[in-house]
Every structure is written in structure tokens, then in C-alpha cells.
Image (cartoon, rainbow, N blue to C red):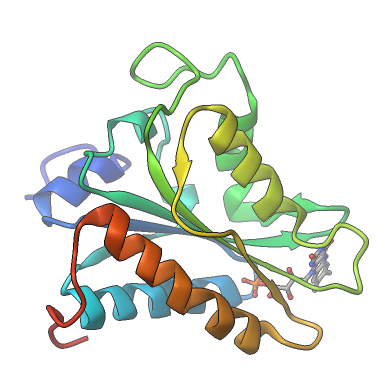
Length: 187
Ligand code: FMN
């Protein structure tokens, strides 16, 4: 209804009856494109709608308040010496900072279900460092990854890496979320 805090993604999910939220850490748009594709696939496969989010536009203190029947996707590119994109700096800081409290008063995300796809390039020393770090931080806080972490290589095989990863991920997703394929709709 637009009356709430515009930086509260959990409220937006609830208002829009969306069970998925997809955050993209993107500098030149590739990760954003994959985030949008993932949203389209969730809709066509399972009939689930997603909130596709620029992490810079949201606060993460209520990341622990994502409802149990929902999942959080992270589509994260790596830059520099294994650094996040500009729009993911605060997200990274919040996850890494053990004094950052979620609304449960702790630095814990017990039982939060998430999916991880990283974008990188194997010619860099810190290949997919951000996806790996965010994955580790989430797991350390008690969150539960759905499927394997995907890692795309922009040097040679981004598209193949994505295609190889996603079918198994959607199988695991369906099992964990208790949804079935073939319930999809348009886009
Ligand atoms: N990929 C890595 O795995 N590690 C890196 O350290 C890394 N540094 C990069 C630095 C620059 C200047 C550029 C242009 C790319 C770098 N990459 C690195 C590859 C990007 O992560 C990859 O191209 C990704 O697809 C970009 O996503 P985006 O378009 O969403 O920003």
C-alpha cells in the first residue's frame, strides 16, 4: 500500500505476497540480468513471484524476519581485490559485522533459507570471493543454503555455468519450499 518504510523489503514481500526476494550485487548489470532471469524462472516454473532488489535501496536489520515459507536469493558479482560492487558494500558490512544486530537482537539468521549465485572471472586472483564470503557469513549465522553455490566465470562460461547450476538448484528449491513445477503462469 506504499504507506510503510520503503527500505523494508520484508514488508514489501508480504504486501505483494512474494515468497522470493532476489538481491543483486551488480556494477555493470550482468548480475542484475541474472536476478531478473531467476525471477522469471520462478514464475514460469512454480508460479512464484519475486521481489528483485538493489541491496542499496533496502535495510538488512530485518533479514531475520523473512517468513519461513520464503527464500532469499543472492546474485553477487566480485570486483577488485575480491571486493563487492558499490551497491553491495553495506550489505557485506552488515553481514560481516558481528556487532550488527538483526531485529532478534543477535547477529544470527537461524533457519533463513537462501540461494547463492556468484559472478566472477577466473583470470582474477580472488575468483568469486564475494559470493564465497557472503555464503560463509550466512552459513555461520545459521542460515541454510538451498542447493550448491553457483559460480559463473565471465572469462569463458558465464552462461554455461548458470545453465549447469540452475536445474539442480530449482530441484532442491522445489523440495525445500514444498512447491511443484507446472504451477507457473505468464512471465
Ligand atoms: N571477478 C572475480 O571473480 N574476482 C575479481 O576480483 C574481479 N575483479 C574485477 C574487476 C574489474 C575491473 C572487472 C571489470 C571485473 C572483475 N571481475 C572479477 C569480473 C566480474 O565480477 C564479472 O565480469 C561480473 O560478471 C560483473 O558483473 P556485473 O556486470 O553485474 O557488475
